[in-house]
Amino acid sequence: DDGSRSNPLGSILEHTPNERKADAAAFKNTWGTTKQTAPLDFKIGAVYANEIKFKNHKFTTISILNYGNTYTTLNIRRRDIDPDKDVIDTKSTAVVRLSALQNFNLSVNEYNKIGLKFFYNQMGRTQNTIRNSILEEGPNERSYAMGYQSRAIFSTQLNGEHKNKKENLTYNW
Image 1 (cartoon, one colour):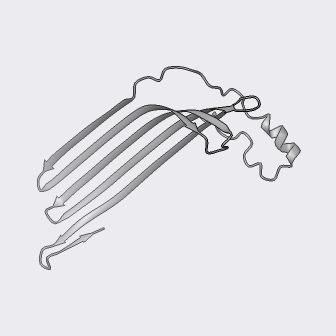
Image 2: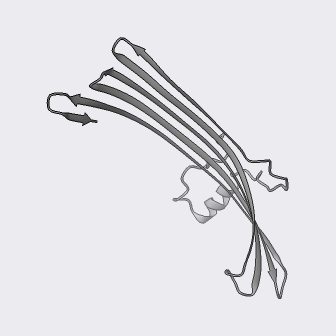
Image 3: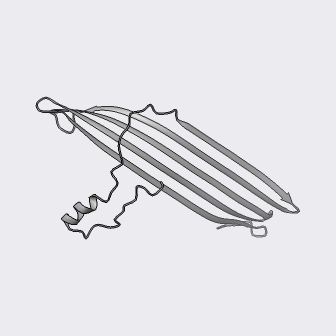
């Protein structure tokens, strides 16, 4: 997200109803729907692993990178909102995912290992719903719902394994 979806006002919880009406004008009104054919889904991944030995030490690394861009369109016919309304929803969703994993491990000797792990995952989801209500009496209705959702997670972990040969014990942290 480039920040264009951010709230230009910050928190408006303390604003009066008249101030909220004025606040609404501060939001960009450049959103709209377009009709187009969705491109093919695209997914790609890459993996790299390596092991380097020097003297009694061993250094290993594993790198993984995944990217996916998927599209779905569903046509849903429903009568659960109002039995007198025949509602037809067209729900279009586009999802972009990026994930990366990086692991480093160092075996100091056969009894001591230290590892460092990094994990990153980001997802962006755009969803548009166009609802057409076909009424038995009165004018038909059309409504739109547009939404965007973004999540990102970053995690780091330091771990170790130590073996005590004399006591036949392993310590993990």
